[in-house]
Length: 434
Image (cartoon, rainbow, N blue to C red; front, side, top):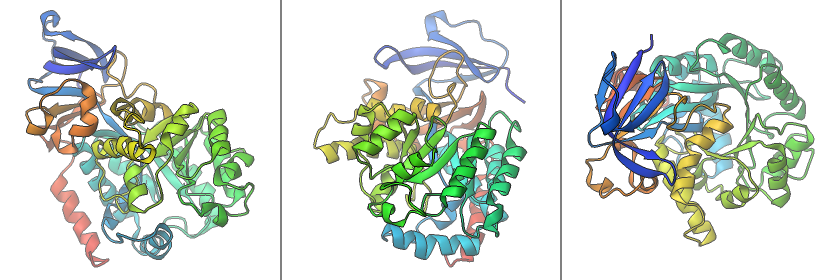
């Protein structure tokens, strides 16, 4: 049931050109979309519907988290300070085999949704097992989501027989395609070292059949090329390209270890790349050469990864880390501007995920919006929207609107019970001694 109209008044809005900050503005939402906005002197008569006084607030497009494993909130802090291979094979995979079930995925995804809403994320691309439960939790939370069923060539939660992994993935797509305008189902082939070439090609063909996004971890670690299943090239990206998997509907996650030839392949294919800076730093995977990818015209987006390899789902932190890590890597303070990092978390993510009507404040775009409380010492003074990349944090988010509906107001989530989520996840955590 959509609110027919929503008017936000007396608010500051970043506007083009130059992303300058326009104060004393109004914005009107009609039937889930941004209808119009302008200065208070020209505000239309108050329409029937909901009204929000935005005094002291900054209106921004909702943030988009383009890579997460939401249910891994259960494993937050469980295996910190470990090498990637040790962390993954000796801790995460065994924990998933033992503890991941439908109940776990539902409640732990719901807790992730609460954390994301509280920090201003309105859309998430998720990839995990029992993904039907993740989709259910995200839908009930009020979020917009691109949930992707995980595919792997080993016994997995919900798919104990690897021979049935593609069939299970197709069942998921059939179940969720056209189920709700906020849910866009997809596929997540874990990696080229956990999926055979045949599995990867079958998964991609299935994604093409349903016109869905195809997500895959790629080139995350320095030694990944040595552990590919039946390598078809000298690098993970060449392996994927040789298999015919790279195109505009493919989303490559991480891409920390690329050479010039890899970047050329990605650019030519129009595949998107999602960077997860804090996860890369925590696992010492390296720092992705984002400025070089941007120089090739590669679409760059941003995600948090799961809580097990990040601990936080705050996309404001992720924007900050993205920009600053590139400055440090290149020893160039101008390498990646704040505006570019903000675009990665909004408009660029939307395009990579195949959701072109998100990520901007413009008429006709979906009304996925957040209001920041600017009455904070660390947010003053404010000269432009770009300062948010470095100054703001998730705790500054006051109101969240998704698909024209108010999902959080005055930092109270209206779409789910946060205490209930925490209680249920604590129960699950006791089974692993957390």
